[in-house]
Image 1 (cartoon, rainbow, N blue to C red):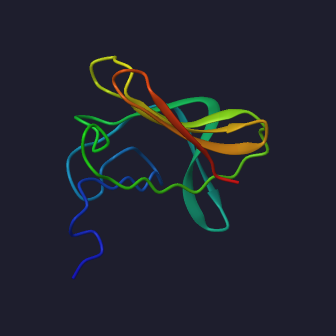
Image 2: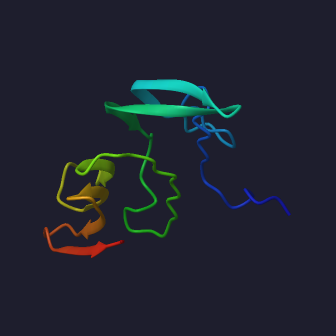
Amino acid sequence: MSLFKSFVSKYDLDSDGNDSIGSANATLTNVAFTTVDGRDSAYFNGAAEIVFPGTSVFEGGNGTLSLWIRTSDQNAMIYHARDSNGGLSGMFLRIENGKLKFQLSNSNGDRKSTRLN
């Protein structure tokens, strides 16, 4: 059984924003690519953006988000997703005063936050 059999999309981000198991390619803005220790990866300069097509699995469904983060920033937005209608529901992962914070909000603007470290 393939590890990726049940995946909807997978983005390697080693040279582009293409979906490596499907056709839901992402649009990249201000994303550079670099090679460190023989591995290619995306480099985000603080102004970079990735826009994923279609409806997010986080809009009323279940999903998994997996990230590797390396930064010396004390305050930075790492991941931010909101509903496709521009409403209040969404999620974000950011560094706030040196601490990792995850927050979910519903369409009423109600928020639940968790510090992760």
